[in-house]
Image: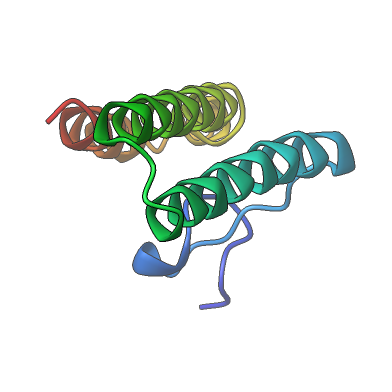
Length: 104
């Protein structure tokens, strides 16, 4: 059996080919988040006030949540829809488990 080119990442052994636009959007978000994390590190090194750091960490959490929401929406529109149309309804259980993990 050959490896399917559908969805979800290394943990499942599945892959997903993304459009250039989707990849660019997601990578831009991650690059901004990475910059925010570097900024917090710099704040620590420069002895910034705790509250200021906490506010920046909150902004990073918000950015990560936005990244997750976008990726999840893309996943539902592509991977989930494709699998359900082809008769693989197990993907719905996978989606439910994923949402449960994200809502912890």
